[in-house]
Length: 118
Image 1: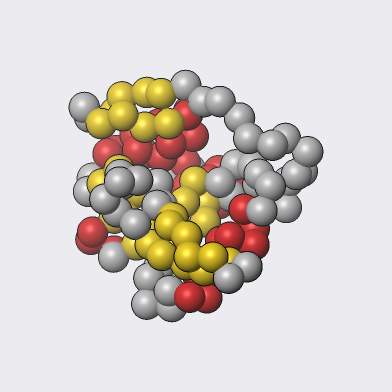
Image 2: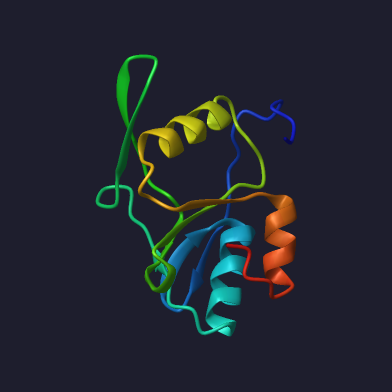
């Protein structure tokens, strides 16, 4: 996994098809989905919540995208911040019926080359 030294970054916001996305990676994923004619939804933190528990505390998580055609959530993850790996492990284990693709750098590159990585 990538370095944990960076404790969170600030990203630019972009607009793709009238929808705001955070950072160039999300923008590129949204544009590639459009190019492949794959419908996507940018999920909202106030509405599209997946619950999980970590260290005895109930928490909320919102993936970056949802692809209704594939019933698939996508988390664009170029870098792991803080306890992200632990969080994603808990989210997946505690929500086994939800298909969540973690789009790491390698998976991201394959997807931008046109491979359906799920």
